[in-house]
Length: 250
Image (cartoon, rainbow, N blue to C red; front, side):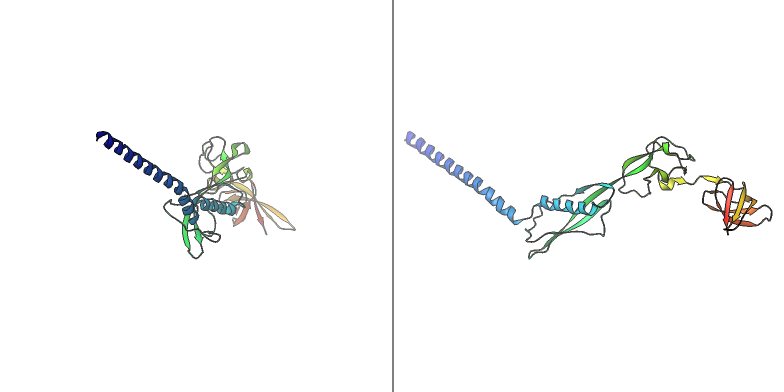
């Protein structure tokens, strides 16, 4: 009896093991096909992301500045029905901008859907920076400057891209090595100071007259300042030409 019972238990356990093996085998064989069938019903998130990247890139292709693009992932829990036509991708604003951009991704099929994706665009450009520390009032020369690639995303102040835009201008405040030379930190050099004795030149196409005057205002080249004719004591306005001359065209 004992031997018969043991053999019966052995056969039963063997049978259960075989059934479990067969179930496992069937599951493994069917799972890939089930997954494939499921994937065929829904859009691939990575494919949508790649298309969104290409769309942003096409909008930036005409820009001179360098850039980098980061497309945020779609939540893996979102299942988007396979679209039977081309998926529409559009910006929610008029133009690509440095920083955060929002894309509308839309399927206009019989089973329509729409999602929004975020694209972060970082813009780069070359700007003038200081090669060494420069003090307030320094008259900038070519050897003070160098072009350097910078991130311009989020920058509020204007920067310069050509040394000609800064040479012979005066710094309003001190800058350190590597600091960007911004438009707001530059001023024309003062050529004439208030109280300076200057020559007032009045001219037109047929004559030119020179007279002595006193500057009533300070100014740089091209600035319009008030001056007083020392002989007539009359106040007039003229254009600063150099450190000693104010021009008045009539």
